Length: 302
Image 1 (tube, one colour):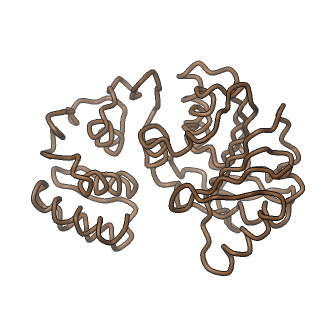
Image 2: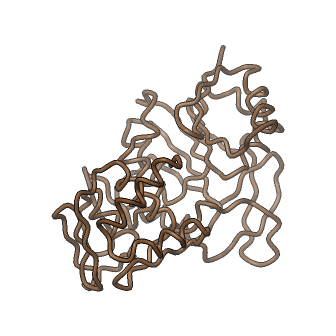
């Protein structure tokens, strides 16, 4: 959010939510887990979405206790065991997802949890940009499978999703099964310009994986590092990349593999000269436009 929206969210939050000052301070200090009143703890992304809805004015009333969350007359009993985390329950009541034992559902989409990515995809439709009917999609940074599921439901003939974090990958597999999609294939691997191995955190879950970057971890789980050329997809139409920085390595060092795709949709996590360098490389054979804050859509010039 922009600073103006953050200020508006803070003011409205103080009016509507008891003790809103403390979680706001935690957020600005960079905490990954934010404590609300009533013993409720949500992840950073869920709090950011709460702030967004406060800033927009779509949240008219908000009540929270150790037993319930009530938003605009929608209510969820958080004391009832459902095998769902607090972030998922909060986002479900804000955005109107139906709550079941072990999953939530809206418009026929079923997910084991909700996070910032899932809300961006299914509520704000950030990837609903091009017609995918009958096309092939490679989804780098599949997260909990939300983007892969979205592409499949939009008519993609084949979707191959790549997710390096083991726990997040497992949830993605469960979500694909939950939605009964047989045209989505998931691979537990990292992706880069060279083959190899990489160590990733074993137990990093979907609600705190958004800021993870592939680095030289010393402890954790070993996963394969594969290249884009190894991914076999029929009719490679769309390549989506949201991998918190790995896109730079792929764009700068595996450019010839990119030109097989008609469209590339990616989040750019760099600024200044690095950003200009990456976009300059892309513009050799693609025409790119920014579709949101960090999201770019590039169309092959061929």
